[in-house]
Length: 260
Image 1: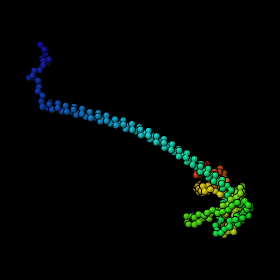
Image 2: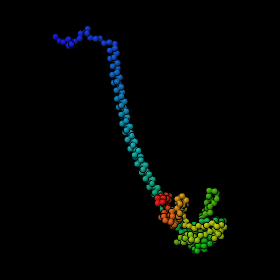
Image 3: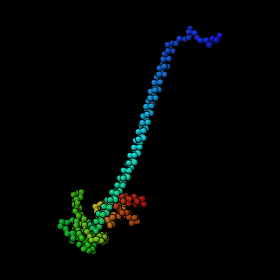
Image 4: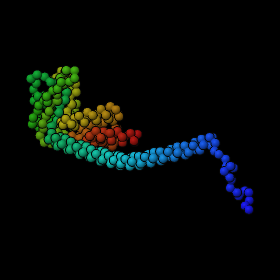
């Protein structure tokens, strides 16, 4: 006979489920279904966001490559601009040099008060006598058109003298050694008369700029013109600079500051 423990329980011995057991089973089933629904939703959401991250990462890589390409193009444009600017400056200097060569025999006389019906030939003859130069050296003399200043006063324009070939430096050097004043020319006043090489408008402006930047601000002692070129020297012991552009002014300032 089988043991009593091994015997199956009879119908009378089986316990009937209670309402509490049924409710508990229903709650467990609901929990399983809710967890499964949440798991499925989370998987779908994670899959969606994962796809979006991959999409955004791909777009970011594209944008990064485009940014690098734009930076490269920007640098190329900067290099091209620098090259064009350098060539333009060289062309301007070349043109100015050719224009300066065309007036290589000319001098300017500054400080002569402009008078009505003035006789420039007589004035030049007096200057020749003062400087011990030959009137025959003069090929043409005329006064440049005067311009109006900001305070509505008219400037006394320079007198331009065209000399025969090879005479300009003699006149300029003689005028440097022999100062001339207005009274020497029979003109009222005692202002100084200056004789210098005639300059192109570009060179004249650069000369003014050089004096303002070097002599006024950075205390260069010497700024002068020689054969149509602007020269500058901080003092007697420093080397001289040839000023052909604004960059040459900046270079002169930088190099002299480094040595001081």
